Every structure is written in C-alpha cells, then in structure tokens.
Amino acid sequence: MRNKQRATITALVAAVLIMFGFWLLLRNIGQSAGHPLNTLAPQGQQSWDIQNLVIPVFAVAGVVFVLVEVGVLWMAVRFRRNREDVDGVDEPAQTHGNTPLEIGWTIAPAVLLAVLAVLNVQTLLKIDNHQADAMEVTVVGQQWWWEYRYDFDGDSQPEIITATQMVIPARKDVVVKIQSNDVIHSFWIPALNGKKDAVPGRTHQLVFNADNPGIFEGQCTEFCGLSHGVMRMQVKALPEAEFVKWKAAMVAPPREPSTALEKEGQALFVGQCARCHEINGLTPESTEPYTYAAAPSANYGEEVGSSLASKNAPNLTHLMMRQTFAGNLLALYEGDAATAVVAIPEGKPDTNNIKNWLRNPQDVKPMDPENNQGMPNLNLSEPQIDALTAYLTTLKSSLAPPA
Ligand code: CUA
Image 1 (cartoon, helix red, strand yellow):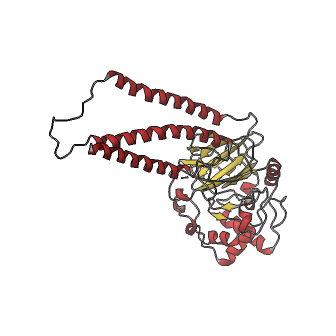
Image 2: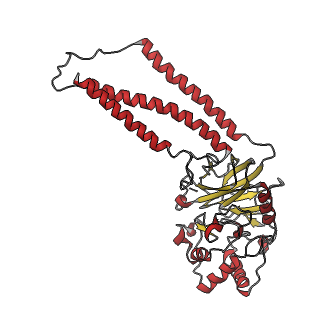
Image 3: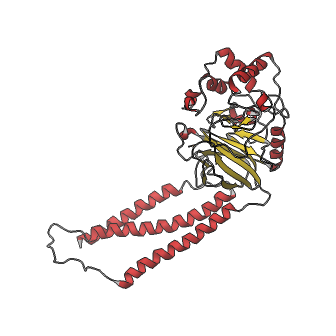
C-alpha cells in the first residue's frame, strides 16, 4: 500500500513539473521583441502556416509525452522491488501475449502518425504555393555573407545585386532561389518561413510573404567554417510604393564623389579594393554592369565572361542603400537610421564602424583570407582609411537625397 501512495505522489509531482516545463516553452509563442530568431513568432504567411501545424502537433505530442512519462514513473514506483520482497511471492500479475493490447498499441500510434503525416504534407504543399507573377530573388551563400540578385526581366542578367539586407515588398509573394558559391550554408529568416540549405550546384526555393513592413533577422544555420556563427542577414519588407522607390534608386547609378578626399578614396578603392569588390562601372572590368554568370560558379573567383562570378566579396555599388554590413554585424548608420523601415536610408553614416572594419576586418569577424575566405587586413594607414570611408559613404543611389 505504501508503494501505491508513493507512486501516486511521484506521478502527480512529475505531471506538475512537466506542465511547468511546457509552460516555460509555450510562453514564448508570439514573442518577437528581444527574440529576433524566435521560430514561434510568425510575421509572414508561410511562417503562420508552419505555426498552425506546429501547435496542434506539439499539443498531441505533449499529451502523449505527459501520459507516457507519468505512467512510466507511476509504474516504476508502484511496482518496484522492496528489500523484504521474496522472489516469486506476491509479484504483480505478469502480462504477456495479450493480443488485443498489442494490436491496440500498434494501431493507435500508426493512426496518429498517419493523421500528422497528412497535415504535414498539406502544410509543405501550402508553403510552396505562390502567385504566378511573384517576384524572384536569387540568394547566394558566400563565406560568410549573403548576396541577393534581382532579375526583373528574366534574362538571367540581374539588374540589382546587393548583400546582407534583402529588400522585398510586404504582403506580396516573393520566391527566394537559394544557391551557394562555396560550401553548404542554410538560409533562415524564422519570422517569414522555415530554413533551406544553400548547396553548391543546386537551387532550393522558399516563398516569403511578410504580413507587414518590417526588418526580419536571420542566421546561417549550416556549419560553414570560421564565421558561421556570425553569418547573419536581414530581410526588409517595404510597403509596395516604397519598394518601387527602392528599386528605382537601386538601378540608378551611384552618386559621384565630389570632394578631394572622396576622390582620393575612390582612387584607393580602384587600387586596393576593386580586385574583389565590384562597383558597377568603376573599373574597366565592371563597366559592363552586372555581367554575371547565370548561376554562381562552384569554383572560387572563376572567370566568367568579362567579369568574375560575383567575385567573392559583396558588390558595393549602392553600399549606403543598406543599413548594415560585414554580414549584418555592423550598422552602416548611427542610431535609429540603422533599423528604419524605409526605401532610402537617411541619417548619419556610422563612420566608426566602417573605419574599424577597414583597420582590421578580422578583429570584427574571424576570416581566413589566405584561403580565399573573407577579407584580408590591407594594413591601411589612418589617412587612407579616412579617404576610403569618405568615398564609401558616397555610395548611395544618385536618386537619393545627399547624406
Ligand atoms: Cu554560412 Cu553557416
């Protein structure tokens, strides 16, 4: 009798503790503030579809888990062997070969899993659905940053190439074509959809449809070398009219440098940076803007046509049209301007961040430039850094108001 009471108390305590664990887990549902990568805080149609599958599946699995765990603990305590027990005397009835019981516990889980499988497949098909005229963005994983190519006329020559911050219209389907230029990465914006691996030589597809304008954070989720842990990205969803403005600004040429310092910086850029970073029309090999391979080359820096296949460094043509750089680690603008949901960022450029990066990029994130992975330390002097920073902060669309 003592065992029976003990078993009941154990089972009750276990049930309370397990419920408390579930409560800790569930109270984060819908919390995006301070949890930018929360998978349970959907802000897009596809992530809602996933949420609407996860919660019932989790509820069913949770009920099964509680019943099984509480039952196991109750039985372990209720029927445990006491010191004074004699083998073969007063043992519980042994159950073996009970056909109805065995058929029952085979069929019940099978039916349950079949139901869950149907719901899973339904959701998988649903999140792949998109409007026929949905905009396409090609996403290319690189060590350790993300490139975005917009090919609006479908001729395989992107009209816009940018990095780190992807810009899309809100409340519209956007088809994201995920590729890789080196190793396997994984593209994941939890507020908008699940994750998909970026695999060299393959194209994987996700569909985004943001509920509202906003900036949604992401993180590479496939180990891809030294700076995998800080390979971050953003999606900025703009109201449709603002997106049209962004697109027009991005296809316009960048502003020309005007001051002596900016021009000095431009000359330095051509000499030091243009080997890896492209600015459309700046150097002879970039005068034909956007002559890129249709798909990224599997080999580093392989020559494709007159230009390198996107090279291995971000295209900086409209650098200041983005709000973060260095794989989303550093802000390009000071204060709220770095997170404002606008087509054309306005505000004071964060020159300290740019200068810190130029002083030694490897202080900001670990890289291995000897093996063509990341940016080398160019050992620039302070006056060179000042000139380059002056030039880089001019790199904004000529349609944008002056900074
Ligand atoms: Cu890219 Cu991990």
